[in-house]
Image (cartoon, rainbow, N blue to C red; front, side, top):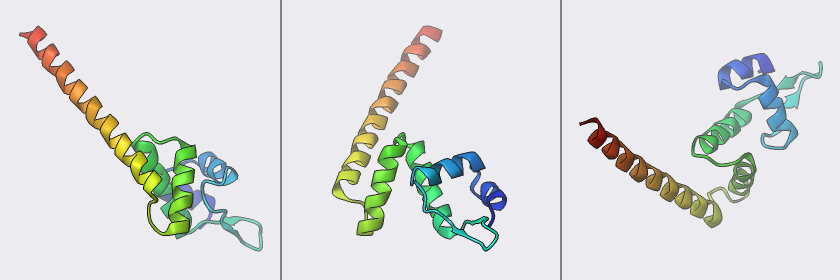
Length: 110
C-alpha cells in the first residue's frame, strides 16, 4: 500500500513513518517500479509494536533494541522481559501513589 493508505491504516503521520524508517525502527518497504514505497503487513506489525512500547513508556531506542532481539530470537529476550517487569513495577508504584493522593483529596473535600 502507498504511504497515504498506510498513514490512514496505521494512524501515524507520514513524517513519523519516514522518520522511523530512516532510523531503522521499521523495515524499509519495497519500492515499486515508479519508486514509490509499498508498505505491507510487516511494517504494520512493527508500528503496532512501537505504539505498544510507547504507551508503556519505553524510549524509541529501547523499543528498537527490544524488537531487534525479538526478531532475531523469535521471543522476548530475558533482558527485555526484565525491562518489562521493571516498567510494570514502576507503573504499579505510580498507581499506588495516585490512589493515596486521591484518598488525601477525598479527605480534604469532606
